[in-house]
Image 1: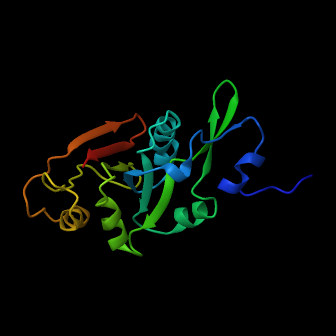
Image 2: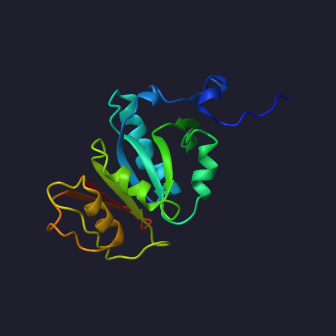
Length: 188
């Protein structure tokens, strides 16, 4: 029996032929999305949809995840170059390596890095998922005004304090599924 290789960018070509891989150059990705709370629901849904968009050639939508509590997810995925495998169970099992995740920041370790990432000109979507287990509704988040790429506005949104320049102008999208997962995104 051959030794098992850890999933990584360097080992993608060694995977069995039936495992789907990212069909795009991950090094050419721009960060377009910052997702707050990088849990399994996000990785099994939004990151997968984003991976499909990237495979279609639109490389503006790389994801930087932000863990708001602990480094566990970052530490597990960093050794795999933030790649992970989705196991789709339908009529036949299908394995797919997801490559849309570029990095994971741990907010308690370095909140400034998260604010700086949110303020990058390429970042146009900030998203989060609230589950019944970890969150509560109603949820209220303040977003900056017509120029959201300013550190003070992002810091206000992260702290829950109202922004000093008025109400947010971003376009909000919210969806919910039958299991109580709520996904929110705002275009910055």
